[in-house]
Length: 590
Image 1 (cartoon, rainbow, N blue to C red):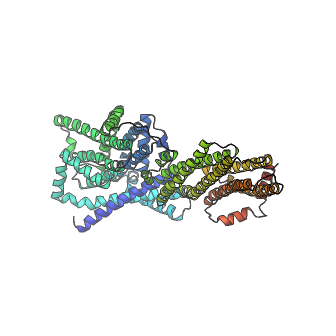
Image 2: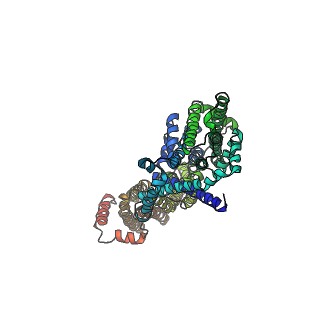
Image 3: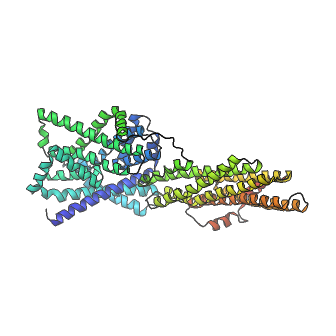
């Protein structure tokens, strides 16, 4: 093989790896994080976990991605170590689908219909259709399909290029002698392990082995130990992912390693022991792409069937390797629990990472609402524990804004579906509004605290008015937060007339308070407290308006907030005026 042949082989390998990555990304975007969510929830039954692990890996085309995701699940506390074992075993089975797809390139027949099954026959058509979807379709779902088709075509073209480039190696004695050395089980296993550890994909390393079959120099005796090593080498990605993770997450990575090591040892010992008596004749035959796919599948399926009944033993072995420290009761704040969901490992599956961010943001919204409503309760009846809770929640919400905002910026650099991009934009825009609402909750708490310390009390009339005003505030918050949590574009328009009514009520409350002040029914000191409270309430609804407008505008890919508000509040908007009048009748001051 000359220099140009080497360059062609390397170029083919590059296309092969890129095609596999592109196809996996397309499949992941098409799933939109739904597969991962299913994986997270439905793992109570070991057999079901194996099937789910196999299915998800077959779809995203990477057992490494699945196991890294599982390590992230355990690290974030959403999954127990015992739940991961079936998924890890299933991932090893699911990854064999790639070798079966690649084995289609080895089809040899003069029959027209059988020739159509050969990737070189249909992948150009898939490439044309895929490029057409990518260039001319506006639908996100079709673009994802286009990415999958183009990725598959590139993968198969890279495979074909590699196969053609290594053909001349069949006539190179040195190459044959190297491969013969790999037929020695330990050496062959180490070769497969190192190759897979370097490229961090057992599917890719099996594909390279299948491409080398074209030379006719790779025998089944050479291929089998290499395949065994490839299964161990793929554990490197999960092991690296476990660095810096929790103990259980590291144990999940170890379970993956132990599963493949034990499976490989048992398989090789049994196989070569039997071979010493029976002498398998096929070991000296030239391996085929389909034959390698068969061996790859048989090994992983047999390992799973053998070790699944001993899943508890694998868990115990991992726990013995990484023992627990002396147990101390760890008290986690709401933020500490949620921030574990923002695991850096999930960034490699953006669709799922967006769902995690959505969950954390919804929890942040719940804490914000709790802080505000507890602060409102303090105005009627001051309680020191509730006051402390409001301050604690405000500090937590500050942490949410910092942690979630940083994670979202990193996530924003990944390729995502249009819907996921919308969700990310909504969360990013609304974070500061939640944080500001919690600040206003603290302001209300301070006003209530001042009233309590100085023994101040609203007049009966002022209390009744404030009760109506408070009801309007609470209802506005409930609607706006529900719009955010459910991405309810339809009800987003309801918040603006509610906010307008609150503005009207605030003006009325101020005027009435001034009249009471003039009549000597209220003190100036109480007037300041009253003004602080109603102003904080009104500003809360301003942020509720921001949240609703953001949800509405992002859904329509329009970020002209001021223009939108002018249009909504214009005299020509009959729907807005009608709703505004209805709400004015609902919130009537006594």
